[in-house]
Image (cartoon, rainbow, N blue to C red; front, top):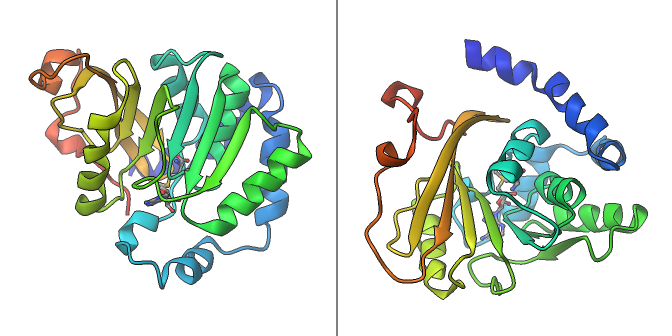
Length: 239
Ligand SMILES: C[S@@+](CC[C@H](N)C(=O)[O-])C[C@H]1O[C@@H](n2cnc3c(N)ncnc32)[C@H](O)[C@@H]1O
């Protein structure tokens, strides 16, 4: 009940970010204009019906600006970073990263309509070189340039998560890895911290990792969190 009320009050929670981050309100205004007459569920169904991927990978969900700012701060993202949003959706988190931190932000998305509209917004706001959108499958795309990878993975299928985890072995040591709704267990990932934040699908955990220099054991969450989420909080709530 409390969580439902929190989700209902998400819009006003976005206002501080819209005032604080230069140019963000323009992005939001263009989202409003481009998506005014589009139905997300119809859009997603049309574009995924022939895709050879599990349907749950393509559920609609967004990182609100309020949670996004917390994530960018916790991961200490700055102008020298290259931020990759794996499965960028409409591109909200990609635009936020570019505008709030000055990093170069790349949104990778398999649904073409999201990418096309995000590119139009990049052009309209002259954000070329700061925000970029690739119509690509993150399981196959080149991730080597990224210094930070962000995966809002709450709804993704187990098979997609497993295939994505296989890509960690190919990342440069020191690369940061942020996952939402998915505690990643991989010997090359060192858990740095975790936060419980409000997303468009409810409260969920964001996990912050770094790719190790050499392989080691995976620490438990309790060892790293002052206030680990209780079992009744659940993991991912998206659906
Ligand atoms: C929950 S949304 C997250 C949107 C965005 N990252 C955010 O936090 O606001 C997950 C997105 O991942 C995309 N996706 C799923 N599998 C993908 C893949 N293999 N390659 C690229 N995008 C994918 C879906 O289409 C969906 O838009």
